[in-house]
Image (cartoon, rainbow, N blue to C red; front, side, top):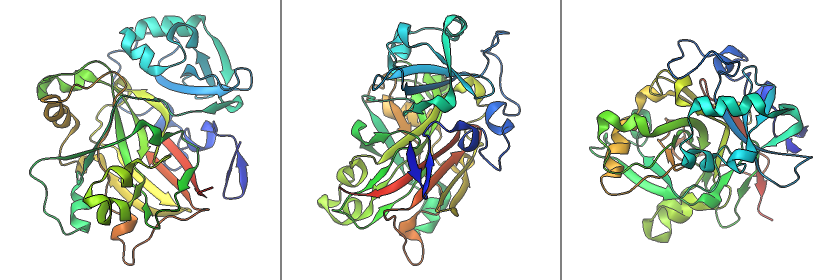
Length: 334
């Protein structure tokens, strides 16, 4: 159980925070309009939305599951894939094989499990800075001619309803909702025309940032300001790319304590996903499960007037059309 705004909430509460994303319209998450069906068979499981979870029955052991189309059940496919999405990706298994596994698996109710991040311990979390036109404008910076890359450590990853620590070494902790791309297979020297073939799916991310450490300390290097523990909430599910008609046409929002701070669209991306993958793989090999954070729209705390920063007790809601919503409470550093 997690306490959010004084209310005890089970961290797997899809019915209100995922299915009801974007104005409570469940169809936007469970059955998005104009979804491509080319990879989807006539089997009963159509919504390839992968979750990692724990339950009372499994204790601390991580499990891997596929959500039912209505978002109320999880089919446990852990035994074949070691309870881990990256293991599934490395296996090269097809969606049809996964669906066959789902048909033979046991199911549990979503409300009875604790959702974890949909991908844990990737080798790389690659981030793109200044990649939304509005985010450039709010800083009075020109549109960049080439992307700015930086990284976060895997120890930043927490689940869709886990707490974010307000580390006591910083008093400038900020929010950044982002579309996260999950790489599906090894990618090296990939041409832009083929880049989307290497994408497995998408999820919602929060690129939490300690702005003082990002901008003023550590010699101007981003690493510590971006890589403090808990600074990358992910979730609620890894949504297969077949369910997202166009990742560059998604509404993306963030609110703090119920007050909207960011409201944009992935159509504002300066460097699109295929371009990012081509540029990165010219020199860096991407591996199954690697995560790319694609940038954030305008409305971050640092550039508000006056500047606003997160404090213990704040609740961050981050949501992306068709992918769902994550909610994270800020807690004091103990």
